Amino acid sequence: MLASTLPPRAGIGLKPQHFRDVLETRPDVGFFEVHAENYMVAGGPFHHFLGRVREFYPLSLHGVGLNIGGADSLDEAHLARLAQLIERYEPASFSEHLAWSSHGDVFYNDLLPIAYDRATLDRVCRHIDIVQERLGRTMLLENPSTYVEFSSSSMSEAAFLTEVARRTGCGLLLDINNVHVSCVNHGRDAVSYIASLPLDAVGELHLAGFTRDTDASGAPLLIDSHDAPVDAVVWGLFAGVVSRLGALPTLLEWDNNIPALPALLAEARRAENLMVVGDNCRSEPARGLEYVP
Image 1 (cartoon, rainbow, N blue to C red):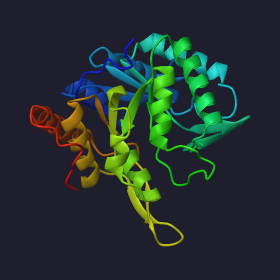
Image 2: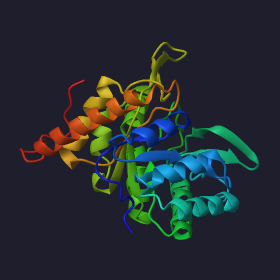
Image 3: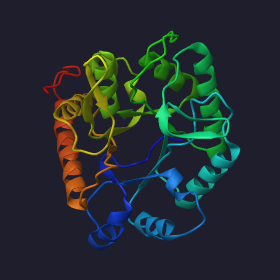
């Protein structure tokens, strides 16, 4: 089964403050995304509105608590709730993060980094195999935004993701904002990072805003805050990706300081305009992943 059957258009997150506006105005948007953990209850208003929205739009289900990178075994109860949710809404895509968020009975409200070594690779692949077999579908794995990294890592993040995709058959969710955030934080080149990924495995893209800060030594530090418009550099990276791959399902993430619905739709329209340009560029001689900040 394909990792995603979303249309090659831009989508936005479905936020409670926009439920009624979406149903009343039926905006021209490719799809909506929701976080799975917000819907792991039997009923209530969230399910009422999601069910109605699902009648008119494809749905992307995005997990934030499966603990794919965790040292513990997967939480069977959580996985069962996820399976029920997928059966209920039949989303066009399911994705999770290359990260960990719990240990033992302690749960963290964060997506924490992993070591890129053989032992972690084996564990992540085993977890993904379990998830895909339990859900009966191929999942997408998202590259993380990171602020620290393990000195014990024996391979790059891109090489790790490449091997995970090869061994498990999962697709990749390429979060371009995460690429920029992590590369700035670790002093790496974002274009080179993207070029080193198995781009034929990418089934969806994410775009978002970030916050600028500095670390203890005064060096630039970017925070993946999802509380602002997409930055010009991230738009440039996105343009480079779609000029190589063509239009792909692309989510505009905005999870904090959420604006009115028209602001989100404007970001989605900008993404779709760049997809059209990207499709046109694909008919010209290849120029790599160049971009202009």
